[in-house]
Length: 499
Image (cartoon, rainbow, N blue to C red; front, top):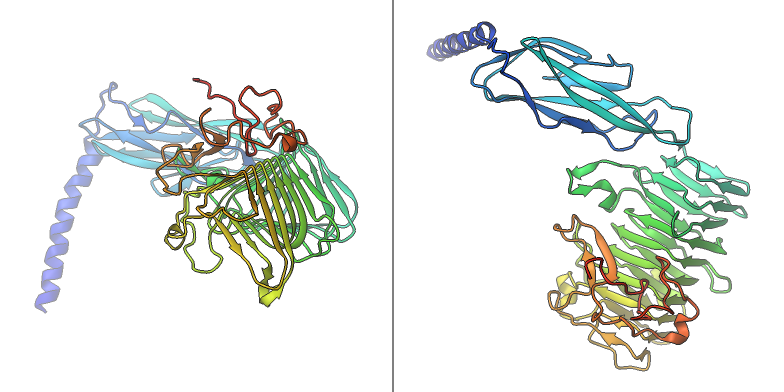
């Protein structure tokens, strides 16, 4: 009985304290017209929003920085819902709100979303609205704007069963997966963009050819266009946003030129096949920032030239049996958003080569690297003692042949016949800066794997007999006329703008 009595006493005391405060808020609003609100942003901008697909939620803050309470006589969405914008004020959804008090030196959230109707054009369309807030007869506003983009929406999976050219007039938004059926040739025009939803894959049983260009590459990326950390880390620099590209066992003759594949889980995977026919030619490409293996192939024939393969939580390149040729390419692992996996198995190297396959199968491995960079920062503790970003997993009794010719390597083991005129870089992570940007927080997690300066190892050290076969780098820089070249790697050295 005593506990019940104490409960009611506390409740009465609490009500007696709160009621005067509420009355004070109701009856003591400032009527001074010079008392204004302030906002966390004058304009709330959304990145590109795919039509018919709702945006992520964004917000701005209303601040009363005055010493007296204010009555917001109205908070109105100017378009009254006609533009596709929606707001939530103080936990309530709607287009119009009236007589909302805000205490002195207090703040309030306004949440905003937008869904844009198709605009019937291939080009993006700017949509604008505003939130109008009136205090003491004075109207203030926060501008809302978003860019609406019509897309080719493939929401239940798409199987291409006939020869097809995918053009670049509108982006493709792939919600399930894009499948190229057996014996079907699919070509992708320059400038085509594929926004891949969570876990979506490209699965090729037939043949896939991309025809990107230096100015208009073909792009595969995740469909999130907003930020995880405002103004610092967009989803488009975060691995694991979608699945990957898979070339199945019966798929041959694939060519990816001037193509960018980024921020997925597995990058490119060439499933167990045969070396009797070329599986894939990858040229002038960038495959980067994956939450697993970035490029893996089992018993395939693959050629990679003028390409950057970079940043993965597992192996950047894993070759398990097969025939491979890499020329003027940069393989690097400076993954910074996620930790590289620290395992005692075949875990996280820039380059893994093995003549064994899953389930204890064995296949000959032959690989050649000309004018390539193979580098990383030796992050996993279990590999720091070995001082190498290259794992050569050889099983006796089967062919295991490799050549590194005029390459820059992060390893302290380069003494056998497979190494010809290689340059070893220091294996201490902080001892040597090789690239311009390697994805630090200060660089907002951006990477730039062009060599840092004219004295960086690899500048002017390429094998010219190989360079003549690939005279122009991935960015269109002429290696043969470069005053400091030819340079090892995917990028011919050019001075920084300030130099």
